Length: 306
Ligand SMILES: NC(=O)c1ccc[n+]([C@@H]2O[C@H](COP(=O)([O-])OP(=O)(O)OC[C@H]3O[C@@H](n4cnc5c(N)ncnc54)[C@H](OP(=O)(O)O)[C@@H]3O)[C@@H](O)[C@H]2O)c1
Image (tube, rainbow, N blue to C red; front, side):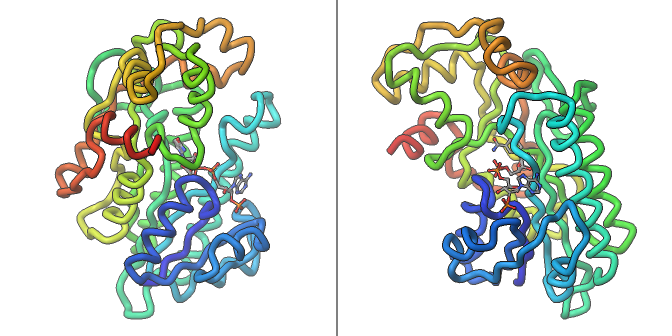
């Protein structure tokens, strides 16, 4: 299979491309940083371009069988202001609109079948929740990130009008050795001053990056995968229980709470992402038979902290 990937240089994309290459797929990586990408992906075709802008890169989709669209400005890259929030929206919506435009020009694979688009979204789609379990049928939230996700998914689903199968992976909190949320949490824990954030009662729907890559591959391969799939492990935890598990895995104490207001002062609006949460169940992935390699936090942390 020949797969066109955007955002392939990021945390999720790097792992996913490694998995695609391992199973013998050809990968075309779209990036704004071709030199770095060529070093990172010696065995992939690297195409230079910014998915937010239409350009010659769109021709590179023509002979691909599927597209995995991950590109989007990182929500933790900067303190939020109006300009940055616009970039968070535009880097997702404009890029998705351009991907759909490129797919509309060539909606069929070289073998004549309909192409597939697997588009990233986030569990932020559901907005902050309490203890109830949420599957893919859950209603969207109404905060900034939920509205971004709703519009992002709608933009991707537009490809269906051209006969493209669209699957959307609502990504949870990704655990990986290479960075992301865990890398940020590790320092205080290693210093023995880690602990729950805010009340600690907020749910944290985590996923090991390797299982997330597996869910993206399932979405790519399985014709029954259409619409949303939650990209989370089947056993979410409250932030307090996650902190305890991390402390145990590191052999460090984990009882010093970080006050929510301090985090708000330090990080601004994005602190909400950490002080609130939702308990998400990957019902579709389970229904489609995805075998989780890291279903519980102990297994995931043992691997990630190895
Ligand atoms: N990691 C998580 O915990 C998490 C949770 C929920 C949702 N997600 C979503 O999953 C997707 C992948 O996440 P990730 O953690 O792998 O992200 P990441 O490490 O921040 O990488 C995202 C990639 O997108 C491209 N990109 C960044 N800013 C861009 C911009 N302004 N315009 C165009 N392209 C841009 C970059 O590729 P180039 O520099 O090569 O062009 C970058 O490598 C993202 O859309 C993210 O919102 C991630």
